[in-house]
Image (cartoon, rainbow, N blue to C red; front, side, top):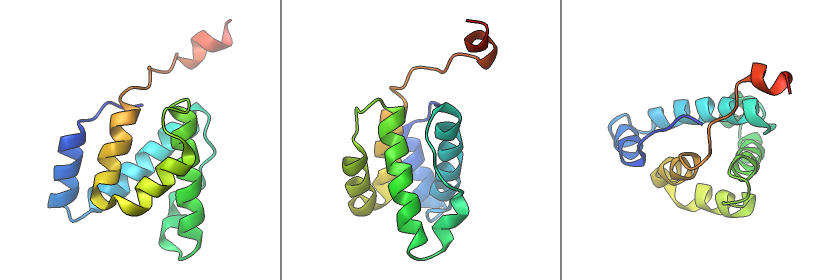
Length: 109
């Protein structure tokens, strides 16, 4: 997962009125998909009711990528209640995830 400063993320979200957080979610969902998560397309965020399904899948991806350091249920509750702090909280967990081995190295083993 890409290393980012949680404080900088909060400030960018504040100054861009949350637009940065939408791009951050799209980027991190792609990174989680590249690891092992199965998160639907980010376009689902724009459709009522389907956005909750997307958020649930995203939170399950957080649990998968962090190897259970943050459970999917906990991530979902944080997502719903923490507002603009949510990306900073999730990013602090992503920063603890070890780098992924290159694909060529894992295929040759």
